[in-house]
Length: 260
Image 1 (tube, rainbow, N blue to C red):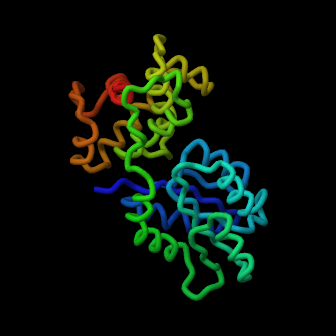
Image 2 (spheres, helix red, strand yellow):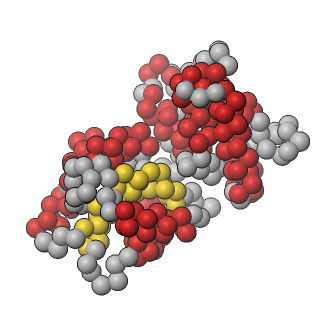
C-alpha cells in the first residue's frame, strides 16, 4: 500500500481554504494536510521543516503576505534533492505569467476561472498523479546505515522521524505528533534525561498534558489505521494489555530503528 501524500496548502482566500481542506480530508486515504498558510514566508519555513510531497500554491496571495512567486523562488534557491510537486492555482490567465511559473518550478497550473475548476478537481488530479509523484523521491528517507549523528544535519534527522510517523498514519493534526517527533529526536541524540519533562518545559505545558497527548496520538493511530500496515511497519512486541504501544515503547522503538 502506497503511503499518503503530504500536502502544504498556501492560500489566502478563506472560502478556497475551506473547500480545499475539505476535499483533502475527504480523500484521507491518499493525503495528509500538513498545514495551511497565507504567508510566503511561513510557507517556506514549513517547506524547510516538513518537506511536503505537494504544495498547492495560490499565485496572488493578495489577502496574505508575499506572492506565490516568492515561494517558488525560495524553493528554487533551497535546491532540494527531492523538490515538491507544485500545483499553482491562480486567477491570472496571462500566458507570459504561466510561462514564468513553469520557469520557477511550477509543475501544473489550474486557472480558477476555467470551466470545471474546483477544489475537488485539483484533488482528483492529484489522485491520478499520486504514484508518479511518490516516485520522484524515495519512499523512505536515505538509508542512514552506519551514520554518525554528529555529521548528520539535524533537519534531515527530523524529516526522517517525521516520515516514519506519517508512514504508520500518525496524524500531524494531532497535538501529540510534535511531542512524539521531538521525543524520538531527543533519544536518538542520546538524551539521558526523561523526555516528557523536557517537552513540557519546551512547549510550556504540564507533563501530564504532554503525556496524555502523546498516548492519545498513539491510541488514535492504532484505532483508525489499517492493522496490516501497522503490523508491517511497527514490528516491536506490544506489552500493553490495551493492544497499543506505551509512549516509552513507541519512542524507543523508533529511536533504535532510526539509529540501526
